[in-house]
Amino acid sequence: MTVKILKRQFEEALYGQYPSEEIQSFFSILSEKHLGMTRLELTLNSEMILSEAISEKYRTALKRLQTHEPIQYILGETEFYGLQFKVNRHTLIPRPETEELVDWICSEAKTQTPAPCAILDIGTGSGCIAVSLSKNIAGSSVSAIDVSEDALEVAESNASLNNAAIDFFKCDILKEEELPGQYDIIVSNPPYVRSIEKQSMQPNVLNFEPASALFVSDNNPLVFYKKIAGLAKTHLKTNGMLYFEINEYFSEDMVAMLNEFNFKDISVKTDFFGKDRMIKCTKNARA
Ligand SMILES: C[S@@+](CC[C@H](N)C(=O)[O-])C[C@H]1O[C@@H](n2cnc3c(N)ncnc32)[C@H](O)[C@@H]1O
Image (cartoon, rainbow, N blue to C red; front, side, top):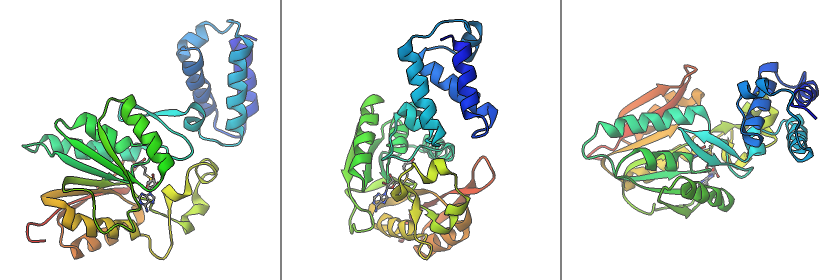
């Protein structure tokens, strides 16, 4: 079968399920992976004959896309902050807004002398935050925790893949009374979506991404933040920084909560879409 015919069949099979630009993008991502060809190279080689084995890879991916499985799980990898990460159904797919959080932390760390050293990432998932900080903050020593053994396995392989030395620990943060050390930076992108928000979510997220990475109960949506803020009070060094990715609907509650915990310099930051998405604060010397 030629590239041209395969592409036409692929587009027809997904027509109506995804916008046409997205279908083109899927085909081009799969071609990059299976043929090592760019979109332009594909167009220039549209009469090229594909082997049965290669055509089968596209057909398998197609069937999975028809169920709305995310392309990142189909490929088993994604890019985050310029680095390559393995992902599977035990790990949340890293989001662009989390790249913005990482970028905020990195740019602030660069202006501080000495650069912050000890960093803890809580709820590491694929390890995207931990690995990116380790690679981009010179002299840092990064630890990361998650409740999911399966996620930690992926995070560990991502640390090796990117030559990052990270200490991983399995722990349920909601049950912990202590953290493993004292830190200059604690960062977390914990579960923060309420069950009532499910109705506005897409099937690719609801049916495929781990619910334990996404959801909190409607009546206690800040459960992770309160617990982590409490632990940060004793496990951040003086003037240490706490960074969170947050639910856009709870920025005011987050500011009030961090004030109650006596953190200073509390600052909310919007994401690319103008939604309140990140917050940072500093441990008060008198905390
Ligand atoms: C929103 S995901 C974030 C994953 C990754 N840090 C990222 O930004 O893509 C939340 C992570 O918290 C972990 N998690 C959920 N409950 C936890 C708990 N009680 N203790 C520790 N980690 C938990 C999940 O397994 C998941 O990996």
